[in-house]
Amino acid sequence: MDADTPFPDGPDPQHAGQAPLRFLPTPAATAAPPHDFGARVLMWKQDPSVGEIGTRSAYLPGPVLAGPRDARIAPGSPGIAAVEPDARGDFLPRPDTAQFDAVHTFAVVRQTLTMYQRALLAAGLAMPLPWQWNSGSDTRPLAVYPHGLPNVMNAYYSRHQACLKFGHFLPDSRERGAAPDAAARVYTCRSFDIVAHETAHAVLDGLKPQWLLADAPPQTGGLHEAFGDLTAIFLALSQLDQCEAIVAQTKARLHDRSYLADIAEQFGAVLGEGGGLRNADQDLTLAEAGTEVHAISQVFTGAVYDVLADMFEHERNPAVDDDAAVLHRVAAYLRGLLLRALIAAPERAAAYVDVVNAMLRLVQEDGKPAIYGAFIRAQFARREVIDAAAAMAPWVPGTPVAPKVCDAPGARQDRHACCGTMNLPEYRRVERVLALEERELASWCAANGRPGACALPQDASSSVAAAAPLQLAVPPVAAPA
Image (cartoon, rainbow, N blue to C red):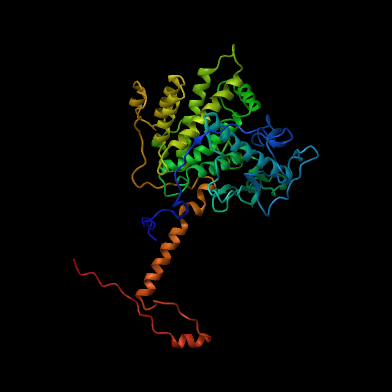
């Protein structure tokens, strides 16, 4: 099929009747669960290669059952055998075991979902953040497979399978001239960043199901990848101990090199990146990124990271408040601001400028200092997302800023360097492509003497003898010009 052949007309059947999201007023708080609801878990609180963090215990409020599982997240089957809680209801298996991987992966997914649920509640919005397939009659949880992709250097979120799957693999040792060491096996589920990133795809897909499709404009795809990377950063900063570690590592200068800006350090090292798989603290612009979604996403990620650094520097006052507490507070506001801006963006073909304008409007409605809007305009102008002249001019509340670099009409996403989620066939509308090919086949058969069903003769030789000569419907030869 020609690359420019359009998909069949009509809406995607999976979303044909899906209404835009509507928020309801926050209901009165229900009674808090009993104190015996909740579990301690042992987990990697950063990438396994980040030695200064390592494994730590964390507390997950709310019921956690054997698996571990709860109402929204469950272990995939078949998979790792269900992990049973200890006598105190906690999940504290030994690291470097399958049971530990199951607990760690569940914990990061749960923390990610809880973080964004809290962000909306803090803004007065009642929303459980449904998975894409959830409805009044379908409340299936997200299935998690920590070891779901043996010998695969990737991980993905699948809407059709309603799951997250994580790969594990042995690094290539041929350059070292040594046999592979089983102890060197890399498990992507052990990366705090990778699990948070893939969970973010599931969260955003529940809000904006059209955004994940490959025929959306490049910047729309960039928003999905950027949201994944920013979620890993925001989840780290949702935990005070990590805020303290970052402040200590950077002496409160977020543009100093740290594990916060590096995404998936262990995986990046295996690929020879010399650091994380991606870095949020860079200066890439939209004009430099082209249509490659991996690069485009870094533009948005970098701009938000710069806004975070600006807001933190503006708010910090060590004589009055602890730097880690300030960083924790600023990150909490910014992640909620970003999530609300994404929700406010168009259901289809969202561009970066749509999200920027929503952020500016919300900052003003939230009553935040005017300099917050100035930070947003300046950093996105530096990345060529919005027009620099408009960013420098006095901003009139309610006036949208103009874009600087836009997707070209008909531009197609280049997803080759993206995570496994972005490269799954289900998001490329493969079913539509196959249906179109089937229709073309049916049309050809009807035009060439095969209009109905053919019964297969009992004797194969008789079928050859009885078969009519194939008459081709040959298109007429074009007349000379």
